[in-house]
Length: 91
Image 1: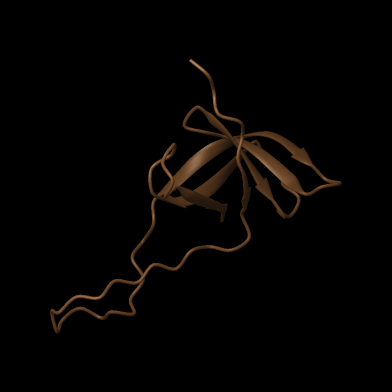
Image 2 (image 1 turned 180 degrees about the vertical axis):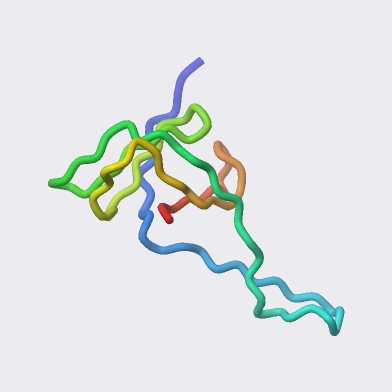
């Protein structure tokens, strides 16, 4: 089985998700909490500001990331990894 190449994702812009609902008790501008995952840092390239992480067994490269000095980082995400709607960013 062939593996996908690591996808480079711009981790500087978090997504804002808003929902509209006809219920009058629901504020359509309220933000829902997004899932977070603690990920192991595989490497950080200071010259290119790219962070490689292990996200649930998948290698992901985030670009434009400030220097990271820890072995683990928290990543927020939407969608399901391996699907077209997957997005993640460094928090």
